[in-house]
Image (cartoon, rainbow, N blue to C red):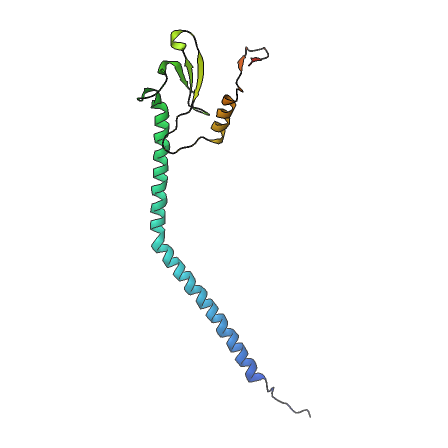
Length: 153
């Protein structure tokens, strides 16, 4: 008959399993504690973050609205250098085209005007339009329905 022998490593194995279980429990408890701390911090700080974002959005909105109002009112503001009767509002990609001299019956100059307020900067399209005008890449074209457009520089 074969003799039954108890494994001499059984207590060490049980100790190893207990250590693994304890480590797993510590990891789970650490995760849960960290998550609770993060949620608590978010609850404390989130209202301030939201308030700051709202204030920033309102500030930016006011700046945009102020700029749009200034664009429309510019011809009647002190210091505007052109006769308001000689300009046409375009809006995009520039604000006005001035037909200098048109009120006297003969256009002597065409001026492209972009109104900027505060620290606003020209957009990429506005800069490219400015560069095209300054480089003389401006032409005249007349078109009638049914005809091919003619262009003269």
